Length: 476
Ligand code: ADP
Ligand code: F6P
Figure 1 (cartoon, rainbow, N blue to C red):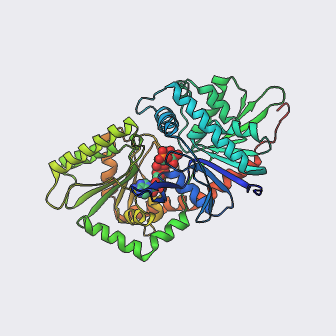
Figure 2: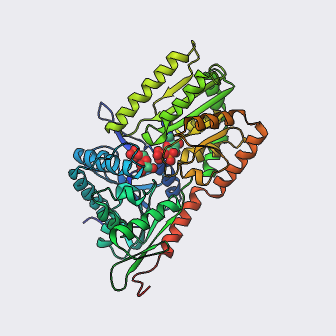
Figure 3: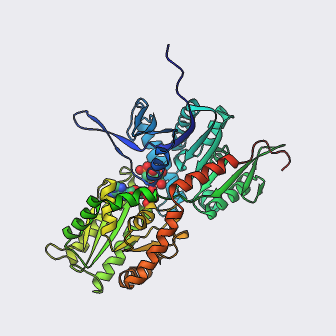
């Protein structure tokens, strides 16, 4: 007879596991690190804890057996090819993603996608309910799993349920466009505590509950149920990076040597500009290229003195908006290099790959100016990783006001990426500000990130979950 299944006092559910299953042409299976900020952050949190991680293994087909990976207890959830299309590429990334990011591209609302979203959320909830020990804490992640809190509560009312949104939560005028807006709010209200990147996101959520569900709200809480309602708290707890671990990596002699090698391989410019993003229309890569091209045309920057490295990680490659973005970026890079390049000295080095963490740390150290120019971004961990790697106090960060990171890293060279002149000026200020002043700024940025690292974020989230009101709260 099989033994009792193992249960855990902390269960994390995220759309992705920290590793993706990759099957080679010869059928060989290997695992590679999954993309995105959620994985970067949660991986370092979970390495120090004895919990389980429920998530999708990144391909279609039956779920692989649970397995341990470098101390993490991973429990895969399977998605069929249709569910990858309708739940992941469709509802998550063609309905919710654009809706929650200021509709930079139009959102689509096919009804079949909603069915898949409900079914996959129910599968995640079932897996969580099976793995959680009595009274355990459950920590559900992000916009792909907004129905899971209520579904888990229905299956296991004994659990403490938290949810964290890694992306923005939209203003009610935008959120209200979703045909399934009420069901999504009701799904989230199954949690005891809801965490957001910025206070404005938490307030948008509370306002949506008040206006669309006619729920009673008081400060940062929403009352759920009649008679003696349960209170759900929604509050900002901004995510961060593993400051100590990443700085230690950046200080490694092989990483330092590699950063020198990288500079040499792009011709040892006086100024190396860097962009690092998933290839996503929210990241403002087009705006960045436009600003750089204008600076080239005006003769204010250019090779061999100034060069630009843009790393664009492949992302959501079967979604049309991402395919259009990729071809537009690649054409623009080709045109700029054709118009302004010299033999052996292109103005842009464009790389469409994922790299190991060591290589990313070396790139960050090699870059004199890091350009982070999203049109909308929940946090942007790249900005925090860059300052973490600059223990030498070198470098300068150009940062969009529309990132969560901006709310913590005010000393950075600010820009509104929609205003190309402003973006150009921010880049030029970052290049020309005297080294002493840049060091002062970098020291302040690093202090903020070191004092608010990812471990502190996790502690704050779990403490808020523990402190969430017990239910029911009669008459309050
Ligand atoms: P998002 O979650 O939207 O992708 P973030 O900036 O918050 O954006 O997080 C991106 C994460 O992915 C960071 O940890 C960053 O270092 C990592 N990353 C970005 N590009 C690459 C790449 N080409 N190879 C490896 N890691 C990458
Ligand atoms: O941070 C937002 C986010 O969507 C995460 O949920 C995800 O890990 C990351 O970006 C990468 O996206 P995807 O999982 O679609 O590749």
